[in-house]
Amino acid sequence: MKTVLILGAAGQISSYLVSELLKETDFKLKLFARNATKRINVTDPSRETVIDGDFNDTQTLTIAMKGVDAVYLNEMRDLPSVKKIVSAMDDNGVKQFIGATVLGIEDEVKGAFGNWNTSMIESSITRRKKTAAVIKDSDLDYTILRLAWLFNDDKNTAYEITDSGQPFGGTEVSRQAVAKLITAILKDETGKYARQSLGVNEPNTNFDKPSFY
Image (cartoon, rainbow, N blue to C red; front, side, top):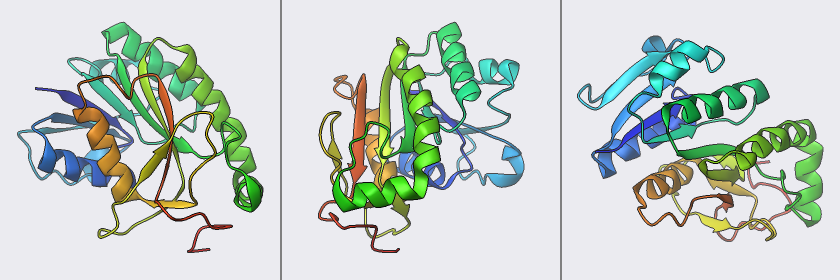
């Protein structure tokens, strides 16, 4: 039985991911977040373990990695934290890493939408290029998810992916769709997602900016 450590488990994507994994798999889940016991509602205590912690707390992070098969990081924002996570994974022999980040870190967003996206999150793109480089330079079996602009819609779980070197495919995607993709990656046993950086968007959303802006 696979055990997945979800870092940033109180985040919105993580919340949808936990629900999806409980429904679609028999995986054990470790839910790691600041003030986790106050922020996370456990629905299956036999499969969910809540861990209060900070990504920069090396001791707690290392303990959380014990017996883990895969790690999902809900936000690849902070460079020191990402370095500590990689180190803790290495120390515990954990290989599979999935990390959510922003679109634009590979200069892959073109045209009017690319210009709009850069104007909105240029500083975020610059920071996350650095965290993505740490992951790519590691020996982890990573999957980096470059996410389109996010919204919530339980009835909209459609997504498409683009590879590195391809133009980004659309402007938006639901968090529920992202959770379904992460679940598919965690369930996959072929290794086809390993060492991949994937753009993630809803099909047929090739707009100049997201529809909700």
